[in-house]
Length: 164
Image (tube, rainbow, N blue to C red):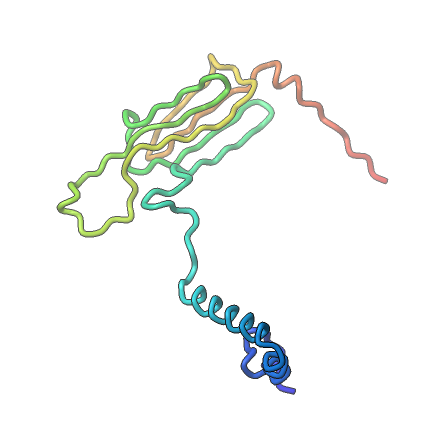
């Protein structure tokens, strides 16, 4: 037996599958439909689920770090300035929003993969000292530092791990 006979997507070489298909027209139809769908979707190539239309779903990209003392959020906002971005904390939800405007008019643009328009990201944040929150913006990076409240820091209980 040839090794290629063991590969399921090479059904055309498998004599046993042909005999079963000849015995049952439904199995033959099933096999042909599978082959048809395999051929169609193989030609499409990889699908980029991260994008919806012309806008990335998770834009701007965020990085959230948490320690015992603070929560730090870093947002990548290339091409923007401070005046284009707003940061708000309302009812335990941090909102980063703004707008990126196009530098050229659409009539002059031949092709573009860049994103322009409004954006908004919301992150649930609990137990932070609201009066000590800081935000800095430099070289397209927005860094929001949210110190945890004393109450939140006291909630942390270290549990020791004992060897067996």
